[in-house]
Length: 312
Image (cartoon, rainbow, N blue to C red; front, side, top):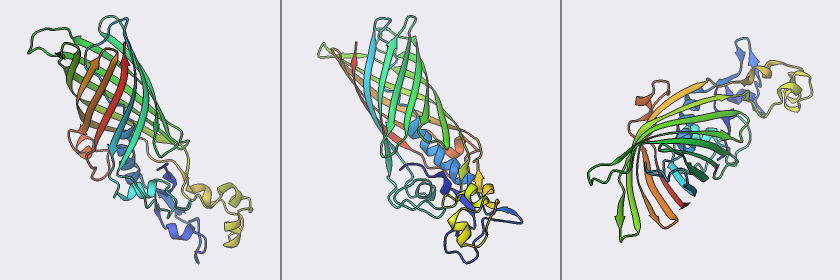
């Protein structure tokens, strides 16, 4: 499931492949291939829901002396039947513009190690590092939470807070992707069996995604520089000699700024220093309704997050 953005192209792919009778890397109208920004935007939109960190905690903080260490795992659904996933991920296919991943998973999983520290005035800060399973990609992130109202003892009065979190995808030199989420959180603490704290919580918020790419080689089977100096075997076998045409197939995809609206429903359990958070996350509206910059229909995604932790 590693990314293969070089396959997300439009144009006459067949003419850039070995064995094509009319092999050509460009023509009078320019390069043979162009970035498929429609497919790219939809892949980035779904990937952002995987990269964005879960909430996994109620409003209440542990105060200036408290801190939490957690290991969380989340599973996020994918529209695995969509062509942009089979084209945009490696699988076992050869590295050409016509390659396809024939084993796209219906969900992606992320494992994260999280550290959160309480501060005065209802603040807490956190940092995390995570691995996107079945890929070589990693994530680093940070968050800030502010408890506006907490510690109320009335049965009807919940705690209220705000959470701001960001995550950055690392490990792919062609793609830079950053997510920022802002959420309003409500929770209510209950005590069961005199020792077990049960804290259900609910949150709604926005997820903003910013992405940009470096130069992506849309014809990875051809070395552009080698073709230009006459040393690429495919260019030579196709009798085009020295040609700079393939340099035009090194392209950047469009910069993206996408928005989604999400909700979290979860429960946080604590007994002594041991705690466990379980939550679900889902889109409130379809992604294309949330953002007109998303080309084409987008499928709503859901996720399940689980985080055992030590809470001091």
